[in-house]
Amino acid sequence: MTTDNEPGQPTRRQHDPPAAASAAVDLLEAVRLELSRVTLPLSTPGVEQTRLDVRNAIAQLDDYILPRYRSLDAPLLAVVGGSTGAGKSTLVNGIAGHAVTRTGAIRPTTRQPILLHHPADAGWFEGLRVLPGLSRVRGAASADALPAGRAGATPDAAAISSLVLVADGAVPQGIALLDAPDVDSIADDNRRLAGQLLAAADLWVFVTTANRYADAVPWKLLLDAASRDILVAVVLDRVPAGAEAEVSADLQALLRREGLGSARLFLVAEAELDPLGMLPRAAVEPLRTWLKDLAADATGRSQIARRTLNGSIKALAGRIGSMARAQEEQREARAMLQASAVDAYEQAAGRILDATKDGALLRGEVLARWQDFVGTGEFFRSLEQGIGRFRDRAGAFFRGEPPPAVRVEAAIETGLQAVILDEAANAAEEVDRRWRTDPAGRQLLGTADLSGTAPDFAATVAAEIRAWQAGLMELIRTEGQGKRTQARWLSFGINGLGAALMIVVFSMTAGLTGLEVGVAGGTAVVGQKLLEAVFGEDAVRRLAKTAREDLHQRCLRLLQAEQRKFLDRLPEGPPDPGVLAGQAAALTRLADAA
Image (tube, rainbow, N blue to C red; front, top):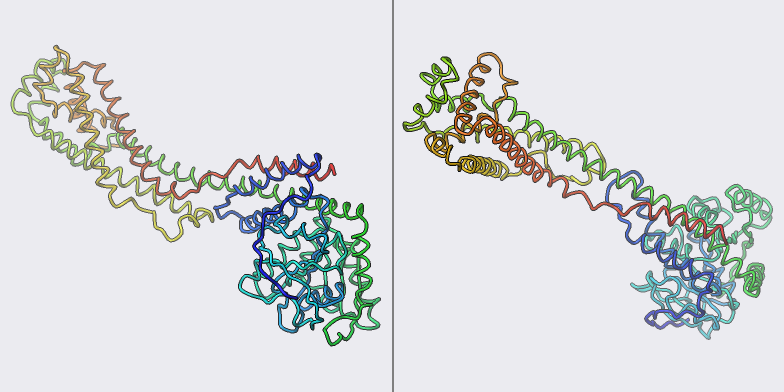
């Protein structure tokens, strides 16, 4: 046989699809589109198999289901498959009556799939109607009788991705034979291609031998055939003389047990090949006659095509239902990871808010600087003599040069920064721990260590606290614009009032113990009464609430920025699994209605 490469051209439809098939084609194309959108990026249970199922489903839609629905009257495609060394190529040569495909001792012999068809059927296969992912190589049967070891296309680098088309009058019109690579080939690409070709078949001619018919790999594919309700012919090759009845009975029992009791069984007795490597003609005559009868019966061919098509669609519906469930698992896994990150940082924000309300920030340096600012002598004695005289004496007390309120602000900034940094680090460590206990989270984190804060987070926090303090000063400035209060707040100084307001914001004393309660409580009262003397009680309450809420929002933004390092690793949410689930149900109805 000689070959010449010809680029595959887009096929033209030989016939317009019947109106009855139009809606089915629309559904199948919608399923194809939805499958192309399926992303399963998270490491959920069974996801690797589901990813493979998605790829295989798309391939089968492209290679077989859509082409067959668009061309229901196209010739049947009979794929000849089986294990390494089972004699597939020898069988194909025997059906054709001459060597058209390579045989030999070196495995694999079938490196390049060869499709034999009647010359009148060439238009169905020259384009990309079926198996569009394989380029076409046009071959021709050699005029001279060649030994089977020299027949067939010469393998090259592109062999595995191309399909050799051979027009041969020995093949009956209405059926084509495709010699596929070994299903258990030592070459990974050959095994994948064999599976792809078998999924594109209208019927299988499955070749095995008397001593290998129970091998696991072929049976896995035969079980797939049973799930698709495909017509299967099993050829038991190299059957020793006298063992026909025993071996065939055992194989038939296996076929019945696995739901393939209707499979046709052909026995090829062990025989010497002639000098050209050909089987005796009589050895394959029953199979040749069966194929010829199938090809001659247009009604029977149509029934076989529809049976395989409906079985493939029903099996596809089941796989798509599983894919929809896998999508839902992806959504749930993503939501759980997202929720665990958000929850950890929300809890951190809550703890920071508690620290700003329970008086904890009035400890240590903040308390010392505030006491330096307001003093502990005459000021507190006046407070003990009666808070009622505070309004009269506070102004006189502060008319002199005020102590450096800026020191109070700096102490608050340092203390608040330490709280935020500590809680942000705790949240990061908690999210990292939670994610690493989950396979999906562990995959997303990889080798990255996100259990601490970002390198520049401390500086960012300090800047945000200063911005909060500046905003608080602006609140006081805005509140003091009235003529009646302006003189008062000018006499106290905006920094002094700002420091007092910060103390009021942090004035709730829960969490302080012993002497701290009295000291912190007393200083808080000083700040509050000072502010009330200037602005009034309602205004102070409003200012404190606004300042606390502003601080809380700023802390939330800081923590949300930190949690992005986790959330940014999450993939986009998968499409709504309800779409695939609905399509699976529609495919089941389509198959059942046939």
